[in-house]
Amino acid sequence: MAFMEKPPAGKVLLDDTVPLTAAVEASQSLQSHTEYIIRVQRGISTENSWQIVRRYSDFDLLNNSLQIAGLSLPLPPKKLIGNMDREFIAERQRGLQNYLNVIMANHVLSNCELLKKFLDPNNYSANYTEIALQQVSMFFRSEPKWEVVEPLKDIGWRIRKKYFLMKIKNQPKERLVLSWADLGPDKYLTDKDFQCIIKLLPSCVHPYIYRVTFATANESSALLIRTFNEKGTLKDLIYKAKPKDPFLKKYCNPKKTQGLELQQIKTYGRQILEVLKFLHDKGFPYGHLHAANVMMDGNTCRLLDLENSLLGLPSFYRSYFTQFRKINTLESIDVHCFGHLLYEMTYGRPPDSVPVDSFPPAPSMAVVAVLESTLSCEACKNGMPTVSRLLQMPLFSDVLLTTSEKPQFKIPTKLKEALRIAKECIEKRLIEEQKQIHQHRRLTRAQSHHGSEEERKRRKILARKKSKRSAVENSEEQPVKHNSNNSGSGASSPLTSPSSPTPPSTAEHAPL
Image (cartoon, rainbow, N blue to C red; front, side, top):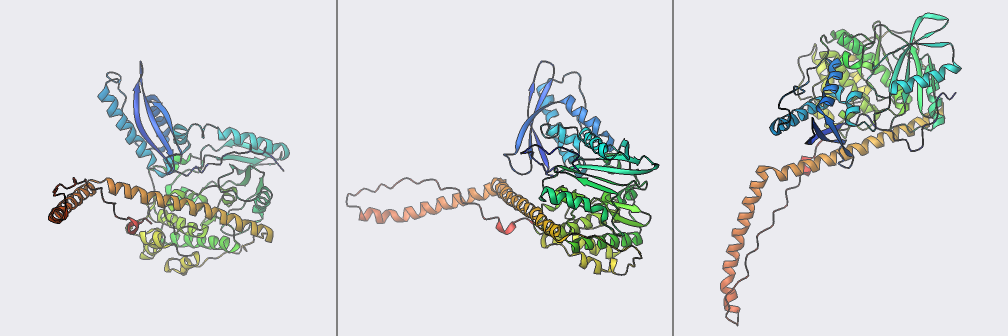
């Protein structure tokens, strides 16, 4: 069943997780206001950059919209008198740059639609809620038993994935959640294979996978329906959040967070590792583990959003693991993301940065051992352990799981091969991106080193030494030249200034 039109040929599928950077380059004063010229860049390539012009009022509007996150952001204050003075404008320009830097340093804010629309209006001008509503309405024409109760606005972090609270007309008290998602940059399955595998998802039965009630897809998107859970996700449990609230409000700066008890960490961790092992053994690509993708059903964790990798959507933590070349398979991505999740379960918040140099006190050293194997500098540099290895570690090895539900997920051989090829393509793009970031980082370090004050001083000292050495050598050659010159001329050629020495190779300081 096709419920949407095919996307136009040549449609660009952006990776929304590629970081945007912004530099306030200049300002220009008009009759009654000042405009700020901002250079925005996607990723590491300067060729992928553009200019935008924004007024202070645009920044103020963005700041008001971001208040839902509950953060105190450093937007420079308004000034009604003297706001056209040159010194004031220069000071405000620096303040606006700092404001943007603070937002872009926050992992949740930097990925939110509000900031993307502000910095990149050409690519984020569409109203995805309206688009999703149109497609859902078209779907209901052929499936009239379903009915939309209300949109669940912004409950997720993805810009191109929208949620709606649903009900079945003849069962009005039962609540369900419909999710609609556009394709992502890593969609490598053929349209036929993609639709077939999406429609297989309701047949997947596992004690630690949240059941899909209904699933369908076409050439450009997928639509899935699941039972609505009032208790929410593992992230809601940790952050004491209401499932229906917007993502920014729930998780950006929560007022109450609490790490879990040791037994909960052990049990939930073991359940999640078991389902990851199940998917890995089946050859089913996942790569989307985080605490908001784990539904809580009593004392049981159930994994969500198996469709994400089929749609080609980028991972929530992609901007982290693209920095580490040893995290280059979907299996190693799942293990690294499990480290993030375990950190949140333990401390009630995500790590400030990755890799993590040292870990705060934990309920058990066994917890720290697992965190070190997935988030430490050494782990990120040398590679991740396997899921099987994590299951053997003391934190999880003694956990007994009791369940009567037998895992079942039959994938035809032809589709297994299609999944294998798609997985290889996803990993190939990741490896290429990691290589580019690695080369860019080496080049940036070399340029920074070459332009540093210490390096300039070193080059001057070397130049003076070389100049003196050349002068001494020339003075020693003078008598020889004088004696061997039949014309009797004692003139010598003038000294040339030495060229700057080539900076030392930075290969030994190559980044992770």
